[in-house]
Image (tube, rainbow, N blue to C red; front, side, top):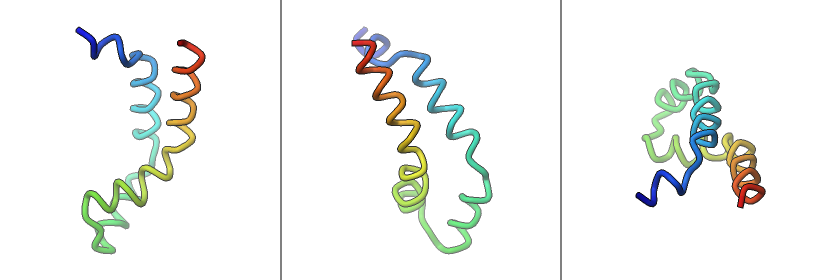
Length: 64
């Protein structure tokens, strides 16, 4: 009962659409270079998603 109230669905949709907009070639290039899933997540996707995460954080702070 706590989890649905902890995260707003708008924020989930915002992050989901951001990750969908990233080019698939980034993942393909990482796989070709020999990067595993955790390395790809930590070194490619997380740094690229910092603006989106900052936006969600700002929306959460303003909402509270």
